[in-house]
Length: 446
Figure 1 (cartoon, rainbow, N blue to C red):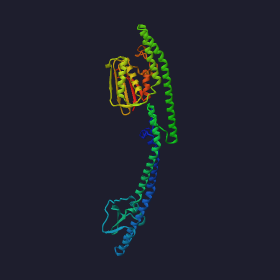
Figure 2 (figure 1 turned 90 degrees about the horizontal axis):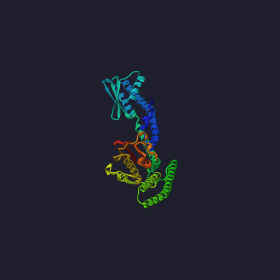
Figure 3 (figure 1 turned 90 degrees about the vertical axis):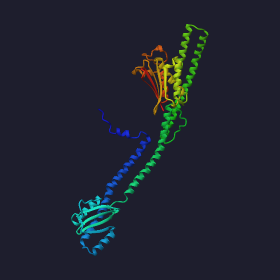
Figure 4 (figure 1 turned 180 degrees about the vertical axis):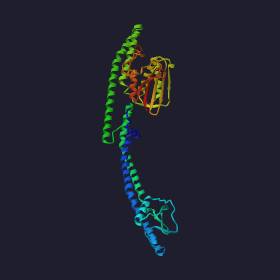
């Protein structure tokens, strides 16, 4: 049993685009570095600084406690406490005859620890005391010999005031760096995205005349290689189309002369047989040329697919001299796509003609999802076994089971249809039909 990869679930959360991944490469180290710096600051510097501030305030509290207990309640002690309050910035008050009640509450852990340790070190004993926040001060109340000694210590003596500034600088610098990274990354990724769109459009058979290389040197080389490849493919298709056009003209000329001579010979059983043979030869020749040419000379244009499918159904029905009711059409209206109109019509005509050849009922449907347009042709014929469906696409190949040689044809109908579908960036898939026969499904990307 294979054990799941520990990082496979993490990969699913990562962005799929180059821009998102590049941004993570820049942002992740920056966030990690800032996290380490923040941890070191709060774990080391900040805690040490708070400890020092707490010990300083604790020393002042213990000094005032010692002062209150050393001197009797006379004017001299009052003067010393007043002078200490002015020097230290504390508000000091004495509450004679009162005692602290448990539990002893503390709002500042560093002050509590520092006061406890300082009392034991300087006075040799623990002292009950409490602390609480009062406005912008920390009020500390200590149990002394004659009552309570209450002191209000400014909060800035116990808490570092530059923590928010530090956090603000960290967050602000991260936002600035992130903004700069997004701007520069967007400019670097845009040429790659444009190259991908151009290659995708060219794969779908659509023209990309305005594509020009720009960006980093590596992207420029890739774009120039794409342009060179596109020019070679277009030149190859053009040369092949021109060559086949010449062959078509040379072969059709003697066929035309034979047809003319047979027409002048009158009518008869042998003449009609020869005419049928010539018509079959001309039909097969057209199929061979169409397969080899691949409709390469036609430009893509935005077309109404429902209209194309309807014309294909009418053409196939007329060619087979079939009854109109044998073909049912269910086309979703308003589906428009940039396609090679005549090529796609030929693809649909071949599939419908193929269905009419082997079935009694044919259903044609057109639908669209978010990313695909689907053209389905179903029939109730004998169908094709699953293990032989890929074999049906082989050029000049006809299956023996259910589709015999007596049915005619050159064995190029499905090959031409799939070639046209793939030239549009899609594909042709064969499966079992709900009518009991074969379903030919053409999928075209939007």
